[in-house]
Length: 170
Image (cartoon, rainbow, N blue to C red; front, side):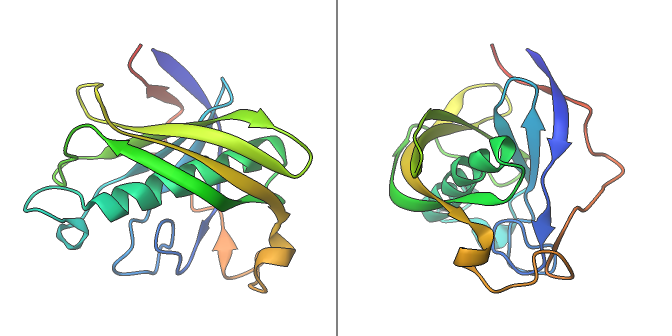
């Protein structure tokens, strides 16, 4: 199923998940899709493995949690972020580190103060490797961190291969 990319979310400098200057980080890119879902794309490095050739389960939890927590930015123009209250996941298949990884998330319920979301790590062949779900507090970014989110610490990182469309399994 082909989905149109509506927007790209910003990256930070040093965040483990999206930090472009973090030499051990995932350097994930986040794209908002036409159907309200958020997709993260990254290529694991050898430093991200648990068992040889496999993504560490803690890293799988980290990218799922981040992708679900960022889904709220889509509907709140980037000012509101999700702060994890509760998160769980099920590991179904190993995630290889030698290929691009895609994580897709969506909000399933929302009220004034919190939201619940779910997501999956999807393998190249379209199968679901890891499923996650969580509950998150909605918080203004200024209450979470004193970093410069309007300047050098945070910004849009355009890449020549940023997609206009993303293929997802049916």
